[in-house]
Length: 240
Image (cartoon, rainbow, N blue to C red):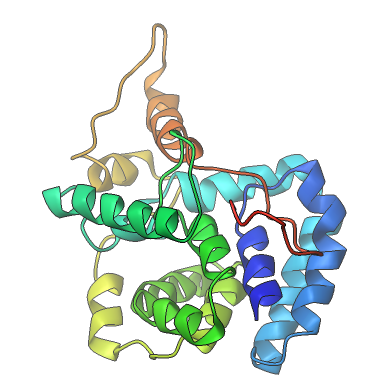
């Protein structure tokens, strides 16, 4: 189970040359797991193959368009729960504290609700506890899977797998609420501005209007990125 969750975490990290080199091992780790439905595993294998063989810059551009520019596909869990309310800050503190109590200490640049980081933490927990925690945001994973399905993205399979592993299955009404929210196309800058209008964006000297939205969102999310976890073997220190 821990290897499966670590592999899923790796698939959701920003594509790098290192991730490409380990994509085959990630696929093997997923193949050895017995908890993921076979059809979902085939889709995950397809994603792993794409990461291993496609042009790196194309993979990075695809990742940015999906997860950095579009709020509805944010990889930050609390974005879908608390938005910019005061509750979000306290939820961040609580989750960070939970990590630290388990021996996981983050850098100042990391946000605890970043899905790959959350999954790395779960990979250190007992099976029952990990599955129970996956059940809490299962409705978010289900909504992300559906939005990615509409975009015909292979990343859909990662979230289908997380739903399958969760102890509690998402409620249809909770998923419907999330899916009713705006889900603009990543190339529609006007719609993206509207979706993120409550976010403060700082424009640097000479920044053009055409790129300001993209650059602001990438800067906001990229700070929480970390390298893909070491999938093949367990770590001596579960720092994530």
